[in-house]
Image (cartoon, rainbow, N blue to C red; front, side, top):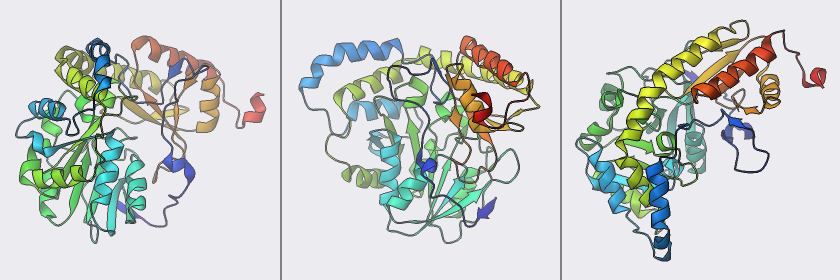
Amino acid sequence: MRLLRNANAALKEVWSHGGLPSANGRPALDFSTNLNPFGPPVSVLRALRQGLPEIARYPDTDSLKLAEELAKQYYRVEPTQIVIGNGVNECIHAVARSRPPGVVAIVQPTYTEYHRACLNASHQVEHWVADGDDFQPSPFDPGRARMVWLCNPNNPTGRLWRLGQLLPWVESHPGVDFIVDESFLALHPDHRRHSLIRYVKDHGNLIVLRSLTKLFTLPGLRLGYLVAQPDRAAALHSEQPWWPIGVLSQLAGVAALKDKAFVRKTRAWLKPERNLLLYKLDAFSDYLRPLLSETNFVLVRLQGISAEMLSYQLLRHHIYVRLATNQFVGLEGEYIRLAVRTRKENEQLVRALQSILKSKAPETQDEVQ
């Protein structure tokens, strides 16, 4: 790991995210958002339909039923340790505001909202970048930093921290808050072994972030949560506005968490489908260099063609991908990020790439017009 000095991290593009709002003319296939292609679960849609009359009443401001259902998912977690947020982004900003302005460290390249939240809270941000082409992260001395932010598995690289690294690092710096975003970990078949949630109860400097969006395909409902020690969780919850989560979102969250069959289906699907996509992308090695991933997306390094050009060409095939060049701190070069979707959709992507890359792509958009 190395400290990235003079990071050009003030670009507007750094604050962008994947995905397009629902609208007429939306591309037929959206590979830019890292969402489960099988969702939302039928159980969630049923709960929303049945719960529609409930919009005539105010929701539970503590989201207690949802917090209790979440606590059942984990070993050694109580509902009092859980704070439900209007998406994990609300939790990120709440944690950033919970400490006075100071130095914070972010493991890069990663989800850009940590950076944005810390700047909004007047923190001084230090960017630590994983060495090597595979962006495999490792512990480092946080120095003056009073917070360390990291994502596991990491977005956009798909890398998972090695087992046994994180907890000793947290324990060796008791005066530093470690905020570990596990939003994509629920998709991993060995998620319990890699998660730090069970250790939160004994570590006051550890906060774990989670999202229901990725696994259950609920981006329009905005459902995220954090797990902290009870006193820290209570303090963070007290800073939320009253009724932060609507009644339908609470009902959807409970229904999703109870749908074990949907979760099993997703975990059984992901690894073989992702590995097949990686294998097929390797066939374009003259232009595409996909990084090994442990989650439901793949970061692809490009050579001989720009990310902007390839994205433009794929749009002509009605496929939208996440442009990653200049959009993540510490990610230098030409990159795109691809979600793992169904077999049929992934094959459609591969056919489009074959059509585009069968001959060397032009260097500028003007040449193809």
